[in-house]
Length: 98
Image (cartoon, rainbow, N blue to C red):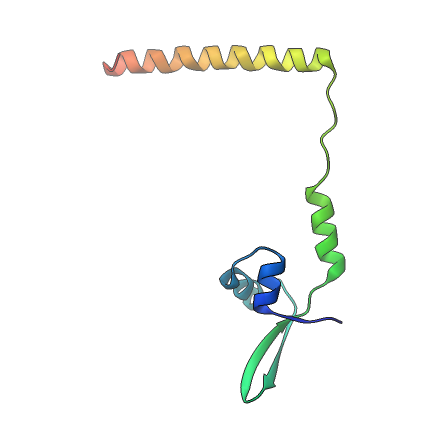
């Protein structure tokens, strides 16, 4: 199994070193501590299956909407914006801001 230092893991996954250290302490990442040149070095044992599964899950495309569905969605959003603007204006008048 390939291993990498905390810093290497942080750079690869675009995380802060502190967050990687917390993940190791909480047991979210497998790790091992090895003594090298009189110093203890912590290595992360990345589970490639988990890492690739995570990236696949986050990149699922949304289903395309038809033109009719888009028009209905646009109209409902316009109605909601209009209603919210009216509500904000009512609140402003009640507070004496307008």
